[in-house]
Image (cartoon, rainbow, N blue to C red; front, side, top):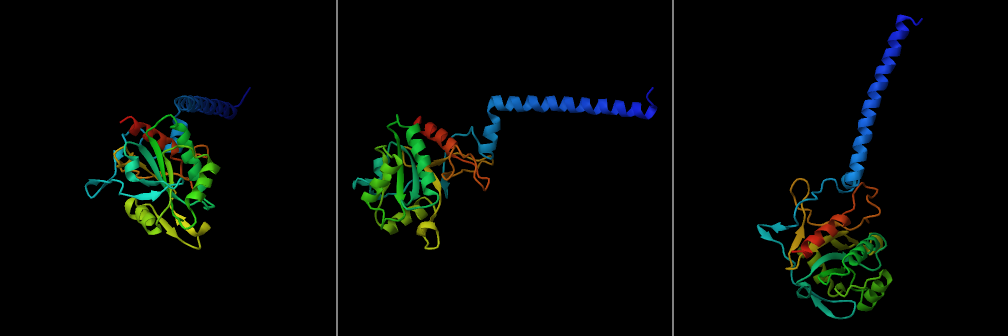
Length: 247
């Protein structure tokens, strides 16, 4: 017959096993429920971002921020201004064709947006080169063909360098700078700005009620997250474009 000590151990093992079974079952249930509801992927990729808020205005000193006037030549040598984008929802970026780092990823993401909204006549992209000395209309045409840029309202623009930098830094508050020590000779932000049909800069809010202002363009949906732990924001950019197109 088992001794008192062995009986106590037996009952202890049974009790521990029961606890593990109960909590294990509960954990599996919760994980299954979250996977079915899609919340596992959403929480991992979109943590800290409100998914239910409307796309608000970006306000500066009490005024809604609007895209300043601009006028540059596109890849077809056609003069394009901010007025050509009125009535359209569009994404703004600053890039350069010889960029060896983030620009190819940014362009890939914008092509993904192009394909997502290919049936919408009210969607466009405004790409401004920060190396206009090299990025002539001819060079931009080659770049457009290389990456499959076909949207008639996606203009890759070049022109006076000082005006482009002024537009980036003072118009959109997006960093751009010539730096010989940076890869490709230029340093710039990999963020996208979203503009509505009336020329206002728009953005959703984070979990604290603060506007995102910009959308991260350096991570694809497939990647999900980069080595720094930053999550992709192309999915939420798509959602917000759809909301603005419907306004």
